[in-house]
Amino acid sequence: MGTVCWALSTAGVGVSQQFWVAAFWRALNGFGLAIVIPALQSFIADSYEESRRGAGFGLLSFIGSVGGIGGGVVATIMAGNEFWGIPGWRCAFIFVASLSMMIGIFVFLFVDDPGRKLQFGTDKTSGRTSAPLLSGKVGAKKIKSLIWVESWEAIRSVTKVKTFQIIVLQGIVGMLPWTAMVFFTMWFELIGFDHSRTAGLLSLFAIGCAIGSFLGGLIADRISLIFPNTGRVMCAQFSAFASIPFSWFLLRVVPQSVDNWNTFAVTLLLMGLTISWCSTCANNPIFAEIVPSKHRTMVYAFDRAFEGSFSSFAAPAVGILSEKLYGYDPNSVIPKTGSVQQAYALSKALFSLMAFPWCLCCLFYTPLYVTYKQDRLDLQDRDRRRIELSSIPVKMAEIHL
Image (cartoon, rainbow, N blue to C red; front, side, top):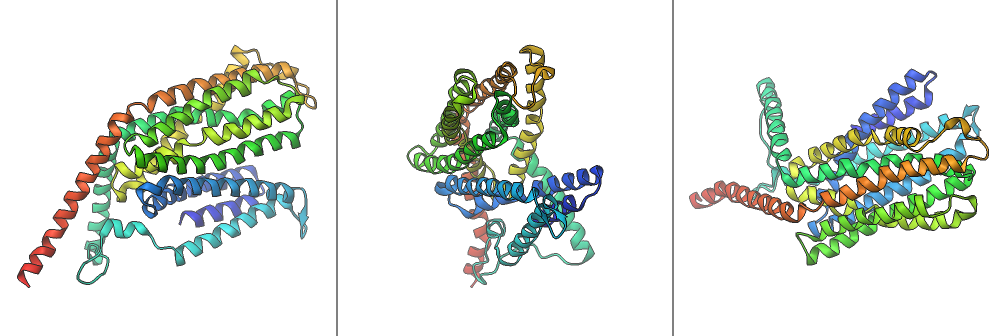
């Protein structure tokens, strides 16, 4: 459903003739993404063993990043041409919508949900998946009421988990720098780089983040085998801490001149390789280990909602800081050559909105050394008791037989 919504809204943008129509379809596109991404993260959590979930989430992030880079290149090439008398940018939207619809159909037809077995279990005598048997209007009403009651109870229980609270808190703070990075394009062009060289720098950073997210998940999987209760937290803190010196070197040390393109390129690549671990090495795998499997989609949706809502304030904050505190003057910018002085002002604001939140993010991970182990053991105990209780009717039946 989410993929179909995503596909239809993307096609809607491609055929829009007015701004408000395009804005409506973009909003609907966000709705589709809000369905797809948490469900996909839950699918990965259900499909991979605990010791391999970091690699699973890393692979998901890597493929998504590579697809984003490739899609951006293809769309940019298509945008400058016409196809059958249709502007290229419209064709790009329709092309992506067609692929999305095709993927949605393939998922519906060929992908099995591993979460069904985890939620309902399998009947030992018949081998069939067990589920509540209710029929008719009364049964439908009971199912709806049970769903709402269960969802409310799940929300209450999940939000009480201390590890969940801590990860969401650090995520709210840790997403601020990533949102602030939307100003990188503007900053490089203020330094004097043209569009192509700026695009090259941003592409190297995206490639570094894609590879880094996968490597971070792999490394955390290996370390968690040695330190099961602290390994993932250590990897996340390393990544968050590494962000601080890289931001300082990139924004405050490297001379802001077009002659230093190679230095910027190497710094951005290495920065992307090291600062992109937190989600794949710790956050997403830990969520799968502290809440029941049937609540995983809801947990990932909550995390995205909280982080995305609060991090949206970062971009306006960069603009306010650069103008009010560091003296950025948009009227003095020369469009073709930029302005090094204004680039310095913007870099100071960027550094403030990146280094300080990452420092807090690193500190906020610290309580997980205590809470993660306890919450993990609590879930294992609940699962063990649930399995024991579910096996009682089977044992009684075997006794009567």
